[in-house]
Length: 445
Ligand code: GLU
Image 1 (cartoon, rainbow, N blue to C red):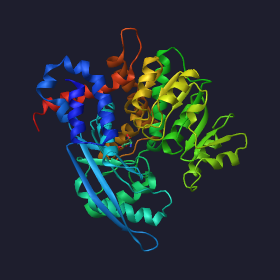
Image 2 (cartoon, rainbow, N blue to C red; image 1 turned 180 degrees about the horizontal axis):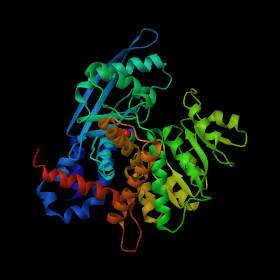
Image 3 (tube, rainbow, N blue to C red; image 1 turned 135 degrees about the horizontal axis):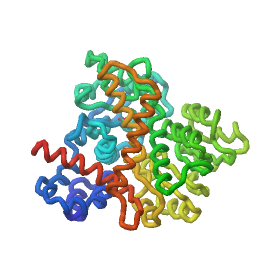
Image 4 (tube, rainbow, N blue to C red; image 1 turned 180 degrees about the vertical axis):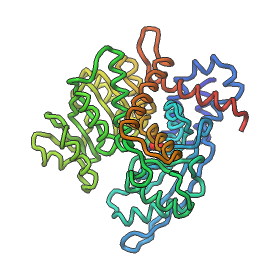
């Protein structure tokens, strides 16, 4: 395989899909050596098959806003790869969503889900609709209109959506409610559901908890732990919240969170009731995190800035793709950062990632670090299929052992001769090998 040849063919076919091409380039670059050692992969044209989604649904979503005006949005579901299980992955509702965004997310999801040890393929969907600033009835009407199109293409053993940016418990409730009405079945074709109707304990916390379990393992490799370490977190939503909770529990001190308006630096640490307060920031209009500094006067709000300016031991991007660039990476490195773990999907630009790896920082990519979210979704699917509910301890313990296993896979495939663990390579190769072998075993389909 020549990565450049494959990529230029892909660029010609999908011009302008920058995020998708970025995600493919990152994976292909890190698996190239292993791929070339296995002639069977080339023979079966695994790469050419793996980089294109199995199919994509695109549809118009028409709904009526509170003023009686008709609104039109775009809806998508990318069923990327089901070699190892039903398509699985979230829905993103955000004004920036394009097909390129969802193709990159679906591609990443395929490898991430493979790493979880659970039988789940990769998929992703969403819309350019943004719930921010909409009333709950508008969100409900949008979700219902969205599901009217999507419902025929999903099912408990076909394709199981969940939340992502802009799709939380409220949206999942409306989406699943409409799905159930149309499909007339209650098999849990959605994860992240409310606890009253088939959801799993620990799912809301799972992405953040899983990320910190992974970071804990990364520190263990260097013979240390998180006690007393300072942590910069970006974002303010569900993922940032779960990460702040677990980081604090493990003895670290979280000093930042951020929103579209800027970031908060709290020298006293964001812990206890301040973490609960994060949940209130979500509904508070244009200024998302700014009100934090009014409530806690020791904290400083930096308008329009990113938290990566701060000197911290650990940086956890928890917001959106490419939120950390080379300049941010260089500053963090200069300031002595020990560990950077992507909790958002593709949170770092390629040159930022390269900078961390080159400087041998403890650095791990989103598909490994944030896999605890979808892994716990997988556990929700198991509970639904068995018609039971596990205790929080049971789910948490399974989540913990899955994260340890992902970490082991990264070491197995990513340990370099000098002992440095290249988690990017480790995660990509481990995920790829599993999907590739499953594809070969199932023939040309
Ligand atoms: N959106 C999350 C992710 O990026 C969770 C997906 C799921 O639970 O299916 O992995």
